Image (cartoon, rainbow, N blue to C red; front, side):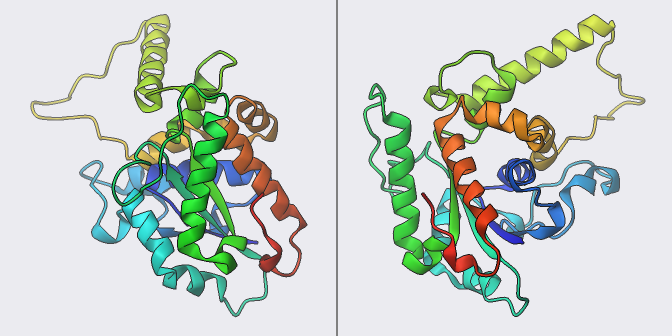
Length: 259
């Protein structure tokens, strides 16, 4: 099985890799990042960079506008699916809904106080992507539409509680606060302090977004942990449920239909 991924950025790809493994056992080598392109194995970049983290090249860049454009263009998606190798293939298209109502996205936001806010916003995001892809490509796609951001999916691993984390107004900031607080508490319990520079001008190497989000979502590789997290985030649950349908694919990816 091969999975082509279109996502907003390398950090989103990192999360999707762990979810794909936790749900379907799909290995990194069987995932093809279509947008953004990851020309090298991001998990090894930290060891091979001499000057620390470098920003992505133009070919490696993505955002929600480019995700929508990739779906509208369709060319690279069709190239991936039309492989001469006879094996099941499908697409995963990831997008956050934080910018849903902005020009270019043009998805009206439901009333946040509605009890079906998450389901409705996710459905509107899927409808937008489907309209751009067309019926045939949509049938061969899975939609990782995160309400509001993919950070809300990670909150299921790092924040206690039973309220849907998709209702968090600013999940990215919330996640950053929780992770930073946990790191500070862990350092204090060990009696350690931040490492000092060895000489004037030295700075610790900056980790890439891929590395950061890969580590923060690593627990999703465990199926039981992923299932527990999905119960706390409806948009994650719906994505996981759609991936489960892929287990039935044996010969033709054309049978894939997003529920």
